[in-house]
Image (cartoon, helix red, strand yellow):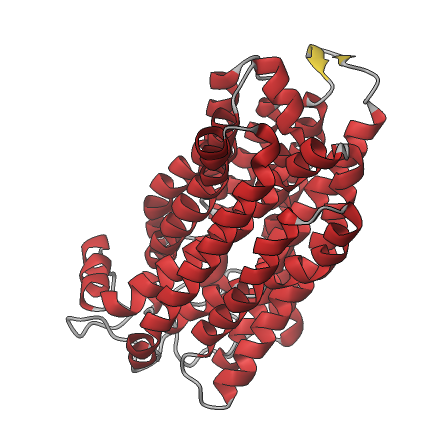
Length: 443
C-alpha cells in the first residue's frame, strides 16, 4: 500500500493480531533453526564429524545465505507486499527443514541448512517494517519485543519436541516411513518440526498489509521523503553518512547474539559429555527455561526500553542492551563451570532471562533511526551482522576453542564460558561507545 501520513492507525486488536501471527511465524522459524542443537551427537556419530564441522552446520551453513539473501529481500520489503514475502519465506524454510531429515551426509545436510537460511531471511526485515507501520512510536519497543519473543518460544519448542522425540525413539535407531523409506531416528525430528510450518504460511493472509508511514523528520540525505522511491545506493549513502550510529548498534547487538547462540548451541552437548545427561532429559528442561524465562526476558527488556524512552532517554534501546549484557556476562561465565547439575539448572532461569533481555530493544532501535522506505534494506544489513557474527561464528567459536585450544571434548564447558562471557563484554563496550551518535539520529 502507498504511504499516507494522515491514515489512521490500525485498531489495537488488528495490530496485536498481526503481531501474534508474526510471533507464530518466528516461533516456527527458530524451532527449525535450533533443532540441530539437540541432535549434535547422533549426527556427529552417523556422519563422522568433528565439533567444528558440526558448528558449521549449526551456524555458517544457515547464516551465510541468510545474510547474503537478506539485502535483496530487504529491498523487496521496501517496495512490495510484506505479508506475501513472509508467506513465501515460510514455505521455503519449512520444506528445507524437512529436507534436512533426508540428508545422507555432511554436504546434503549443509545444503539443506543453506535453504533454511534463505527462507528465514525473508521474515524479520519484513516483520520489523510491518510492525513499525501498525504501532505508534511510544509502543514500538514492546510490540517488537513481543514479536522477537517468538525466537525464544521457537527455540524452546525445538528443545522440547526434539527431546521428546529422542526419548520416544531412543531404542529405535532406524525408522521406516511410507514413500521416504528407512531413516535414522534423529532425522524424524526435522520432519516433525519443519512440515507444520506450511500451515503458518496461510495465516499470513489473515492480516492486512498496512500503509507505510513517515514523519517530517524522516528524510534521506538528498532531501527526499520516504514517499519517493529510494534506491539501494541511496540506502548505502544514508548508512555511510550515519555510520557512527549504525555500526555500534549492529556490532554491539551482534556480540550479544554471539553470547546467546554460543551458549544454546552447545548447552545440551555440554550436559551430555560432562554429566551424562541425555538430550531427551536436558532438551525439555532447556526448552521450558527458554519458553518461560527467555520470553519473559525479551518482553521485560522491551517494556523497560519503552519506559525509559517515555522518560526522555533517546538512547533507551541501547541502554537496555547494555543492562542486559552486563547482567548476563557473569552468569554465562559461571554456569558452564559449575560441578553440579542442580546448580546449573538453578541458574538456567536468570541465564535465559538476561540472555534474551536485549533483543526486543535491538529491533526497535534500528527503526528509530531509519527512514521508512529504507527499513527493509537496513534491517537486512543489521541481520547480516547479527547472524554472521552471532549465529555464524558463535557456535563455531566454541567448537574451535574445544578442538584446538583445550583439545578435549569434555572441555566444552570451559569453551562456552570463555567465548560467551567475552562476547557479552565486547557487546556492552561497543554499545556504550555508540550511545552519543545514536541519540543524535533518533527521529
